[in-house]
Image 1 (cartoon, rainbow, N blue to C red):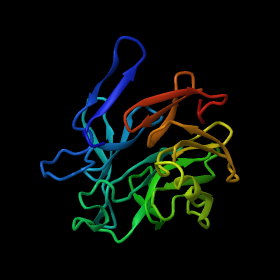
Image 2: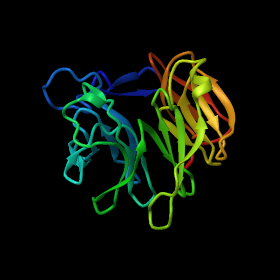
Image 3: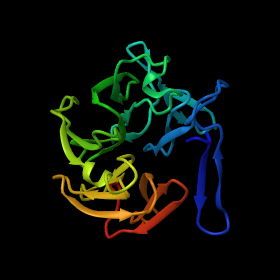
Length: 262
């Protein structure tokens, strides 16, 4: 994110290389500590969708190589800095909007909303505000049956994993604290951040110390210690290799499960 660049990596001699730069900020104003794109996901057609801090939008890479803006405002107000996303099987896009990409974060004069929201971009292009009851919404994921929404909150005093039931009309049920990371945060560096769900509905979320493995009922099942602050994770290869992005490394580990959708 700070380098405003998306990198790619492949096994063998190629290793890592630059995929796109600039990745999330096309302006020239200095002072952005995290201007690049953050959350990335491919839609059902293989198009890369990105949350872009600096340009304050959710965008999609076109087959021709350009980008189209999917959403950059709600009710006439610019987003803060879209952070992470999860794509529904219908094509709708759920995403979080904390202040981390703004130069002065929550105190930045460019803020136009009074909240840090969780939104959904509908398949017709409209934007729905799902909740504004999070202090710092960050990572986001859907359960395999798409009936639950999970959001990681990175706020220091309340490092929580939230969950909601998704009603048939698309609105959210009452907010629940699925897991409180406070105790782990006093022992390890890091906070709840990017997350994914495996085929059995178990949540794999970055957090204090590395990656936490949490049951749908909120029980801590395991803890992968990376030794660094860890920001995101996702499955690759045959669906059973978990890749993790830490402060200075990209790590991977074989798992006994596969990610949802594999």
